[in-house]
Length: 78
Image (cartoon, rainbow, N blue to C red; front, side, top):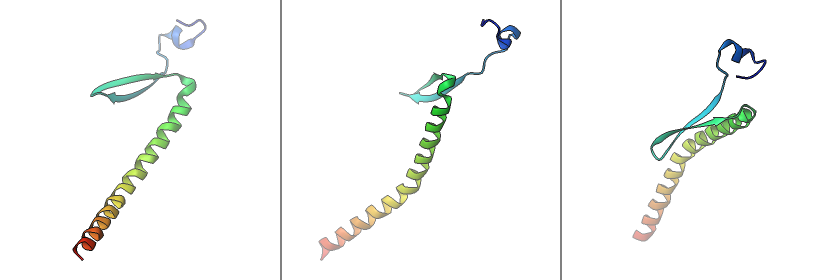
């Protein structure tokens, strides 16, 4: 119990931040100290944005690979 803490004195729990994920098929949890929450949140937001870009780029990349493969096969036929 923290001295002079209204939450501790009232029996309320303190807000805490936990980052959940999976490692080797198991759920893992990592406590995030309050002072690191903004940085972790920014990192998660940027990671989601990057993931969205990759999902957009992947189909275009696969189509480009298929076109290149088709051109190479056509050149081999000639």
